[in-house]
Amino acid sequence: MFECLELDVRDGVAHLTLNRPDAANGIDLQLAQELLAASLLVVGDPTVRAVLLRGAGARFCGGGDVKSFAAQDDLPAHLREVTTHLHAAVGQLVRGDAPVVTAVQGSAAGAGLGLVASSDLVVAGESAKFVMAYTGIGLTPDGSSSWFLPRLVGLRRAVELTITNRVLSAAEALDWGVVTMVVPDDQVESEAGSLVARLAAGPTRAFGRAKRLLQESLGSSLESHLAREAEAIVAAAATRDASEGLAALVGKRSPVFGGE
Image 1 (cartoon, rainbow, N blue to C red):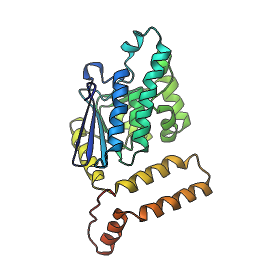
Image 2 (image 1 turned 60 degrees about the vertical axis):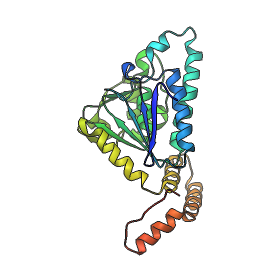
Image 3 (image 1 turned 45 degrees about the horizontal axis):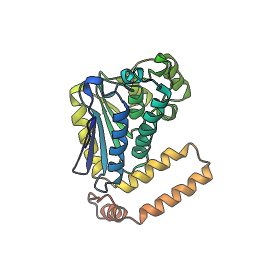
Image 4 (image 1 turned 180 degrees about the horizontal axis):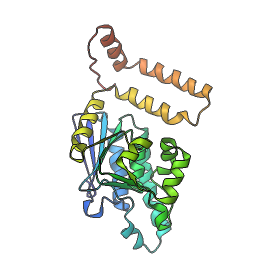
């Protein structure tokens, strides 16, 4: 079905792999289109309870495919089409119930950093590097990076990353809150796989409602957000997972969630 990425759903996990290793998994129009198609499949599949996003080869994602951009006769029109698909894909994954775990090896630049920032949890190798890169070629951020980074690192640091194109090491990215954990390079796949498997065994709908509450919190008044919290917990209480979680707690056993 796809040429520029791989999608494999097994054991409740959607394994989504950017597969343009010879181009540093750079995002061209085809990859952006396929990301949207894959994200729609993932969000629409009730068997998917967690997502693992990774890049094939030595680098996670080098951002936009600059060579393909340079070959365009009408670059503004081309970038509008690329970002339309890319941003729709990001929105689908961010708003979906299934938690997104991203495994980063090598580097994440430009839109690759946007994919990292928009993920719920990020496992990075200790030699990984992170850079915005856009202004270095006279462009501006896309891929959600300018929305998520101020929320993750604060406005002052987000401006620094965007204007100076400072390269963050994995240790700095952990300290700044860009990634969740840093592990030895040869353990990125195993740690991310272990983490996403644990999430896939969790209460998927509760995860989704909790994610959206957190995403909406900075743009809400206290009163309106308290109302959203009440609505969300009431809706969660009506699920089978809530019944199972409460029964397990009372029965002093581990819950067995079904994702519903």
